[in-house]
Figure (cartoon, protein in one colour):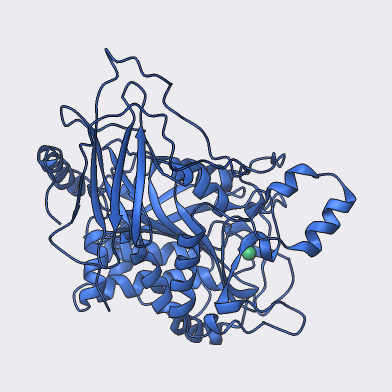
Length: 486
Ligand SMILES: [Zn+2]
């Protein structure tokens, strides 16, 4: 990837920081530090061959040992950190896999998978361990994996609900035993909700995830579940749930109507879901898991069209943090026998990798001021898609979009709003750098719009209240590399 004007010095500083901090074993992701202890313990285990990974279920201690061993054996490709602890004090581990595991790569996306949010949905937990294994052992031999890790930081959380997993039983396909956390809360109903006030008491696991995704700007995410075979995309909740929240009639309506709740980025979410489904061995066939359960055309569904829910993680990721998350239901049986795990890995391996590469689709770039300084927390809104994505402290943003012509409005406190038209093509991402001009000395005819997403409000893309400014953005491809084929 070519360097951008004005970013050379910042990038150089980051490289220097990276070299220093790598040797000191401290991560640059604010608040999440791989500890000395983790590395030291891991080294001993790596010598004992602790990085071998069998197809069996790993309890929390075995999982911890494995992650430590891998982080010690592959220090140039991995970093292990904990984002907090479960109710019963188990670490919520995250393993970063990247050519730059300790340091965010300027202009390159961070992505994630979170598994086992429902403690008894166990397949995703093991698949993430196998994904770790596959990525670290393929980096030198597989050019696609090398490209992915050279250009992406992949954060993998094998278990968001280790307490629930601890009481779950192998072979139980349909029960809810182990689904909840240790205080009996469903963690996928425990996030703030746009459509309906969520009165559930926030749980430590959810609070940890909320803090994590507020500190790292993730572009793309998948939440791994079990009990069905489908890729389900936002919205999970629906405006109608807000209108009649306590009415018996409403609950009946919601149980049977199953109206889709369409997100502004519906086309993108459908595409992302199809990438997973079409690369999966079976998902796109849309065969129902058992008689009486639904079949999903092409193996994808709008979340609310399946069933609406309040407090889910995917709507929160999208509306609060501009991270496109979908829910991946990867096994009809929630906790199948361990001997079936090789089959699940084979079925999902290609999907899991290809899905993450989608973070490189669309437009990305930097928002800078007239002096080339990054503008943090600038709101980037694509016209007709009224969800604000915000820039990082380096002024970066990522916007996954399908091929087409778009207009983006960039606003920030103290700056004149900026409108820019740009084109997205299929084969590689569009680099879109935007320069904002200080509002000092200008009296805009109307204040810059800083509206939150309002699903019921139709915004006209042809009328703009922004002060007209000279477009200072450049639309170009990255020049150096292309979205790889296979
Ligand atoms: Zn689930």
